[in-house]
Length: 423
Image 1 (cartoon, one colour):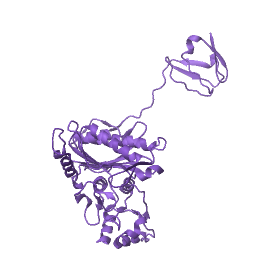
Image 2 (cartoon, helix red, strand yellow):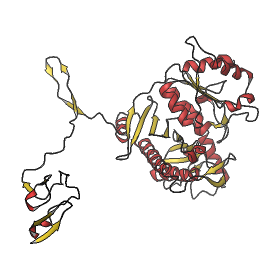
Image 3 (spheres, rainbow, N blue to C red):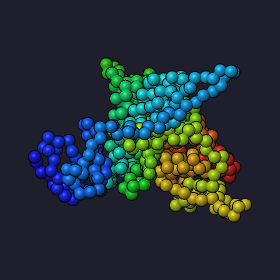
Image 4 (cartoon, rainbow, N blue to C red):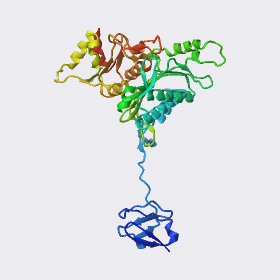
């Protein structure tokens, strides 16, 4: 016989049984894990040999919510039941559209690779203060902007995921000087443009950030042949020509929002769909189906710190928004400092966002290829509008990869009202 001490008393239990019994330091705990031959049930009395009893009947199985079923009556015959689960993952959604012919298998792989990069970036952002990933990296990008540590790391993550997919021919990043042609042995057909971290100035204060991407169709004239003796500059030229396409040529575009939730929003030309990351098992789950932006909204997003630098017509428009309307309420001003956050709110609530040109930035601050074109594609798919004040954003063909443009984007009627003031 071997004796054991419990928190509330002493019990003597045969040594042969001791290896199968789990003791609790809290005498009130009633439930024990399932033992090899059944369940041990603990009473509220002080622990003793008599205070344990066993039952050989198995514990009831966990309750699993059965899939919902759908039945239809066809004539006098009742059709067979079709089972379906209400939760739909991004992977399942992509495969479904691949089967229906909306996208091909290669584009499915590219989009899956982008979603993987977004998951990794989201994880890094959540731990950025703990792992010392805040602050400046000490380098300057091609636009003359100071790079954050996560700007550089996120760019490498995006490039790595896209290269390893084996389905991308050209990768163009806001953080790179020129587009990169993927090596011939790994390259695929698609051209992917992206801004790995939009709103990186918000990282140090744990505010909203995001990633933006756009995917263009195959253009084989930019694949680099490793046996080609032509100068590298010519290869770069071919890449630039391939990448500089108008936004109307986009096959897919989207963004990933990093905030209180991680939301992957996507369009493949068949509407706009948003998937929220479930952190319990690391999958994007469909939460917003076929998003339609409201035709009007009561929110405007402009950096009004530049008000005195703007055109008089634009000032008149903003003055109008500040005036109380028929209901006695004026528009609400909201400005996050992150394009992804502004567009996400606008898709769900309506309104207008503007980043106009000014006396010091004649072409605005946002990049056409990496930011404005993909976001304009999404907003138009949701029923909104996007313009530079003179023409549709998606009709502009970039003359250089890092070209900037003014942009006004949002609910259709709000943008049309702005155009009347700027006309």
